[in-house]
Length: 424
Image (cartoon, rainbow, N blue to C red; front, side, top):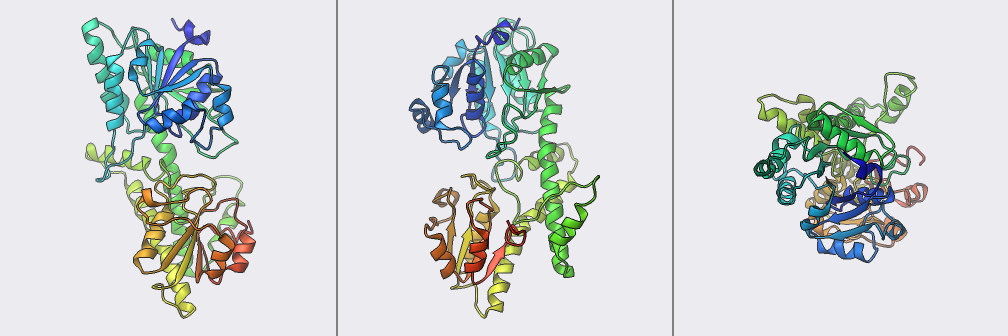
């Protein structure tokens, strides 16, 4: 039934060519599939047609190497000639903190227009348990019903959560185990035939909802443990203890302990967002996710804590925050990436601006924050700015920074990542 995948002569599509979809499209092409990427952003389509990557984890050379098997378009009609389609669209929270699955619904309606026998549809977008079977599947079944097509017989639906960690090189999209789940047993078999040619290891689970829950729990685990270690920092601060001494002592236990590190909060498109999908789902059935709610409160308070540290340090030097020159190092949510989504550094910058500080920031990967709602452009002369600043705040631990030089040149240093203390 799925020989076209085993023989690598299938034509497949990836909808959404962002930090998840583009690496997937390249990996699919590298495995031998003919791949078409679908995205509604004309700038992305133009860049790919010119062989220019806009994703740090995909080099121009990767696109060039797969040029004969990878093309990009804005037209969903190409799905009529595809054997499979993977959906890699963003699922943010809306202004009320509720899941915004509008992109999945819009995509599902487009796929339904071009549904045909043999098509394999895999959702990769992170969402709450039930999204695949309660939102995507009904759209496709409605299109299939007039033809008498049934899921698991004429077409196939599955969920396989993305596990991309931007900037990581030890675990890649190919080597990271891939969770897969089909709506039916035949749907799971279809995923194995399709993705089994691409990923080193597939991890089947019993249902799409179980796979959706597993993805949310992965990131909720990090979210809660980061909040726990941040609370450790707050407790040690109040008790006059060295948080890092405590962590290093606890880490010597050879079992039952996983080390997390404190900082200014959590950021990125996943860790601060995904747990709230689960919390929302629980509220929808009149239940609560108490750990998630509490962890969210702790992490959200960390930028305020560090801004207070800036204020205290300036006060000790006989200066007020208002009018002081404060340099924030790093705007990205994690080291060595050009992504400031949900970055706690943005909150720190905004709070300092609100207090009247003369705020500047430096980030070698992010030259402007205007699109993120922060009216600042990155400074370029790092050494000069460090020396001119009344206070330097380390917000992101980019590897290009010389921590010894920064510590030596800063009049006051507030190190939210403890890079100088660790001697990194």
